[in-house]
Structures are given as structure tokens and as C-alpha cells.
Image 1 (cartoon, chains in turn cyan, orange, blue, purple):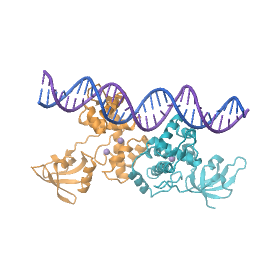
Image 2: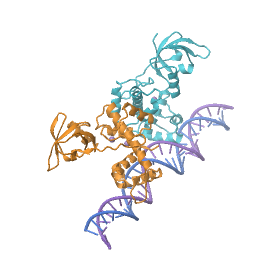
Image 3: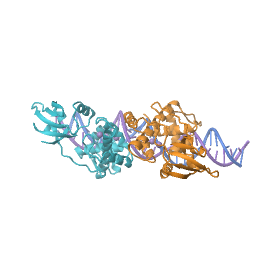
Image 4: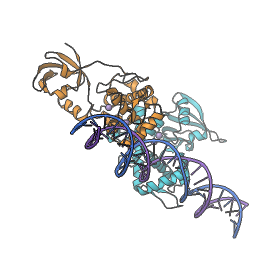
Length: 219
Length: 219
DNA sequence: ATATTAAGTTAGGGATACCTAACAAATTAA
DNA sequence: TTAATTTGTTAGGTATCCCTAACTTAATAT
Ligand SMILES: [Mn+2]
Ligand SMILES: [Mn+2]
Ligand SMILES: [Mn+2]
Ligand SMILES: [Mn+2]
């Protein structure tokens, strides 16, 4: 049974792996905020468990077993976030921190019951997919708002960042998952967008913001 | 911030303290299923934290601070049990094991929200009191069913054991908190009781069972 | 091609939380 | 009052998870 630290390493490894399957020890250390010797030591333990491949001075990679183990932690994390949001009424900017702890509970019936109460959700409060019990992810091919053309209307489906500051910015702008957004105008100079959604008309979204919004084209 | 192990030691210490404020290292070790040297070492750490009094070869006792710290863990445990039972629909025989883990989460807002959703309960699914935020317990003076006289009618208020086997026995007998029980007869020989409650008439409860049921006299 | 920089490793610690074996102190029984 | 038993302590380990300092290997720049 993986320890809390191990589960956090697996999640970080999965995240880095999805960007580049050749993971450096340094970036892993940065993500987890631990020193390089700490990572070095832990990686040897993970290798012994069969979750990563490790050879001295070479980049780390996740094994199939490691990917599955990581997916199961991510599953617990995202189910927890969904539970905190849907059942307990927490805001999407509050759920991550608490889920970071709940994800380490060792109780299948607890997570099964959560899943059941939520009606077997397939995504978390930030639109990220919840892997199934076997660790399989549903791949969504959402588009990035910043790449949508003028005049198009889209629905907000997911976020590429779940940073608390970003989520609070979206709260202030009253942008949430499901919001139907029309791109009125794109400023050539800085690629900022003028958009309308709900009761908001002609709201300006900067390029970095629009680049973090994943959408589906409606028309 | 106390570690998980520390929180479990505090709870065990509180339990033993309530039976006898002079706690032996051996009984603490037995309750926590750890060796005596392990307890010895941990007690020195707890003493350094100001939670227990410790002198070589002398019995351990909880300080006021220790009692409060313990009460706050018990509060988290019992709120969790109540949440698991009332909100998530778990049986009273299932909640303890999961709460044993949830109690260690570090998040005030999480437990506050639980408390709120439950309507600020004062007792857990087994009838045990939930201490307040300052660590104060409400003392109930319930009577023990085995000491009730023939012909009396009582209401089941709490249990003196939350052992899983015992709870499953009560489930089978359809005895739950709130059950109104009439003592029809007491057998002199073994002190077993013939009782009636709900749809059940003339059910025999052995003395050890009746001694674990805490009741309030109705008539 | 060499020098500089970045990445990874070793060596040597520390804290927590557990263990067994051996022994000492205190209590209880004979 | 001894002897036996129980209780508590020390000594010496182990595993996990973290650290800094110093070093080596690999990659990058000049
Ligand atoms: Mn999250
Ligand atoms: Mn975590
Ligand atoms: Mn309990
Ligand atoms: Mn616990």
C-alpha cells in the first residue's frame, strides 16, 4: 500500500510524464518542492516497486504499473474534489487543497460511495477527466479559447490551470464550466479577446487567460 | 501540528485517562498495539510537547493541554462518523474504521462544513458526545439497561461499546438509538432480560449485552 | 575543444515511528 | 523477606522521508 509521499510522487510523475515521458529528477524535485537527493533516493524506492524505470544519470520514466497506480491516486483526488464541490458546497478554488489530503485515505468503500452519490461523474470541478477504476482516462479533444476565431460561440468545458488565483479571477468574472461564450473581437496587437457570456457583454480576456480555457465549439 | 501517530496516542491516552488518570505505559502500548519501548520513546516526545506528565518509572497522566488536544481529535473523529452515517449512508458498524483515517485531515473548513451540514450534532452515531471547539464534553448521565428494574420503559441513548461485532448483533436484533425498550422480566439466575421494543416482543438480552446499552428512563 | 553550467549522485545527518534483546526497577506472591 | 512476575528502560536496529555540502557526469556555450 503506497504511502502518502509515494502517492504524491506518483501524481507528480504522471503529470510530468504526460508532458514528456522522459522525466528529469530536477523537475520532479521542483514540482514536489523537495531537494534533488531526496528525489534521487525516492526514485530508487519507486524503481524497486516497479513503478518507474531508473538508470543512473538517465531520465526517469513511468512503467505501465506506475501509470495505473498514479491514475488511481488521480481518481481519488478528482472524486474528492467533485464531492467537496457538489455535495459539500465548496468553491472550485477551495477543493484542491482539501482533496490533496483526502486522496490519501485507504478505503475503497468510501470512494465508491462518493462516486455513487455523485452519479459516477466523468470529470472534476475543473473539467479534468476522472480515470476509471482500471486507471483509464477518457481523452477529450477540447479547443483552446485563444485559438477560436472571431464570431464563434463556444461552451467552457475545462481549464488548463486550476491555480487558486486563476479560479478566483474566473469567479470575479462569473465565468464557470458550462458558460456559453461568444468571441466578439480579437485584438491583433496583444491577442486579447472581447467576449460575451451570460449577462456579461464585451468583457476583455487577456491572451494568457483565454489560453487557459478549454472549450467546445457550438457555432 | 500533531502527526497522525501523535493524534492516535492522544486519543488512546484520553480513553485510558477517563478510566484512571494514572496511565501505565503497558496498557497504552496494548491499546495502540505497539511495543513498550515504542511507547516509552513517544511519551518522551509528548512530554516535550506539554501534553503528558512523565517521570521515569511513574505512571503517565494527561495535562490540561493534552486533554484539550485529545478532545479536538475525538471531535474530528465523531464528526466524521456522524457525517459518514448521516450524509453518506454508512452503517454505524462501518463508520469507525473510516473515521479513524478522516480524523487526521488538517482542514478546519472541512470539519466546520461537516458540522454545519449535520446541524451541529452533539453526539455521534453510537451516542457518544461530540466535544465542542474548546474541547469541552457534555456529560450525560444515562443509566445502564442491566440496572433497570422490571416493568420499566426506557429509550436507548448510547452504547458503551462500539465494537463492530456488537453493532452487527444490534442490527440483527433491530435495536438502534432511540428504540423504546420495555423490561418485561429479569432472570435471576444469569441476569438476562426479556424485553420488548418496536415490533419485537419478548426478546432475550444477555447480561453482557444489557450492560452495554445506555438508556434514559421513560416510565 | 575547452570551459562553464546544469543535472545527478554520494556522503553524512536529522526526525519520526516502529522493532527485539537485554536489563533494571517496582510490585506482588509465596 | 525473598522470589517471581510485571513494568519500564536502554541499547541498538530498521524504514521512510526529508536536508546540506561536496562531488561527478553530462550537456551547453564559447
Ligand atoms: Mn486538484
Ligand atoms: Mn496529496
Ligand atoms: Mn469511533
Ligand atoms: Mn486514527
